[in-house]
Length: 262
Image: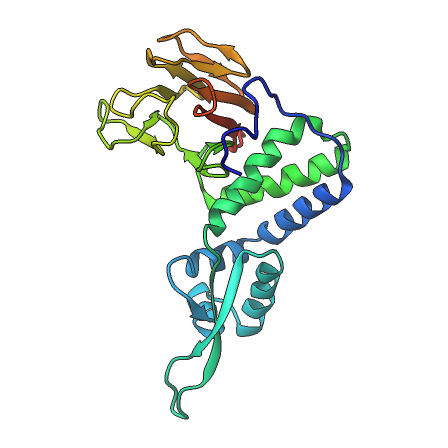
């Protein structure tokens, strides 16, 4: 991982049917497609808490909260450690305290991103419908935005970048703003990518349509291995492979829509 050579520039997504993979993905979605469990994840996002505190803050019973928590533990999104509960008239008692594993919500968004990328190759209509339904419930629950980028190469491989709309610029290093719009700063390792102060490219949402536009970068931008013309927005529909720059220090990403219309 992170050696810059895992995904060749001209590579497009190829999927073979793997029953175990789709079963595991469906199980993860099944666990998350529950408003109570998503509320629990948000409750412990910033600090660890014991079950009684979580139950009180989510407006649920202790037993119900415990049941949901152990489902979240089963898919590796939550961790627990021994601690002490809140003081009571009888004293202070040891309890299990629960917290999110590092980057847990990124892992959720990552699963959604991968599902959207492979969805066209899912042949079983029942599996596709089930995953569609579960994914829609999760997407509404986490409210993570309308699209995402997943970094495929280099030291940031696996990074999930939610996109919420408007104009989002992308570039390397530095922290200079560009035109007052939001931006994605990539590691200086991606030497082929133009510095963020220019920037290299922009992701644009306009009237429900996503675009990528090269900003006259020195090393260019490609979509599915085809160079795009500078200063001309290129439409994105989902599952495109993007490359910023050229060679082993370029940044390769997949663009995936995670929103739902209607």
